[in-house]
Length: 529
Image: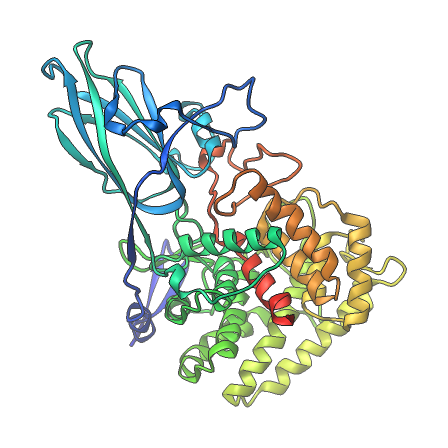
């Protein structure tokens, strides 16, 4: 059963109850793990620390937590030993004279130390400050067990007594964090990675993926806690080489398929609480990534029941996208349906968008063949026309680089996506990427592991494995050098305090689109051993 409805007299949605019911049938039961803090840590003074990713062990580590108490303005930082996603509880009692005033307590949850050094009162960014993982609580009667209902994404828990009274202090004991994920490390295949740096990168990327795998593949468990199509595509690929949880991938594909516009646009992301709701954000490339994600899933599973159910949605998405291609084979983008490619607006994205369309059409044609699509030849003709236009009008033979047609701009994303789309053969792609390394490395102006992933994969595709490995080590390895337990939403090696939101306190330090080294290593390095 399907039905339509309209929001704000603008977007008209198709809801398919059958597809959404199939999505709900694949909701995972979350695995819960008890985590006890491994110790207490302390801040380092600004003069002594090299950067804001440093903490030191406290001299109180040799004591039991209940051996000392906190009065007005005093605090302590619990270290969970790793990054986790879940709920926190702790027992609190009063010490000293009878409790003649409530306990006024602040709890702060941090994924990395830089969040502890940042003052939430100073935040004045464009994202809602309600995402800050900070709670202010009054407790009128002690002893009590404080069980916080919210879910947090963190390694560190800071307890600060804002006030008691001069006559008594607060004592804490039995801190417990219940970590949650839809998968377990027990599901991981055994892999042997001889290179210690690559091994560390692989392990941290796996942990990133694990913490983002909840009832859907979340983009970030700290924020936005949503299912985004661009993230899903990369998470699913990493998942196939690690946990191989096929039910979660299927759930997410059916969620997107069950909620799309009447014209065939697939939303860039969906909300799952308090009820299934599509967001009214539309990105040209993200809509196409439903098609490529379906292709990846079918190739991995041979689940032809899913193909039967989901192919019509993929076809509608492709048919809508083809209306943006002119008679010469040129993709014409609009402001109403932009291409994302990357956060950065420092480069023009039309050539990358052209390549993403080619990349998608190639995979769609394979789905069409498996589905016995009668109009397959039409899509092949369009693909051939787009490839020919790209070769003749967008490739500069002298520079050995793809250009932006209107401005002759040469940027990294254009080369990377044209190589991923395999517009040319491997030999020519290798020359393109070698020239890209020569002209554009070290990369500047790009701050997301999302884009860095595509650069690394393009290098592997072009038989530039040495350069691909070096870039992984320089980028993801640098995060580990700074103490990362999970990989970050945004990172500039040349600007360690970079935040797209104006403060690290809103940065996501466990983010889905940064988990792909496990896929890259698994597909391009381990598969060759």
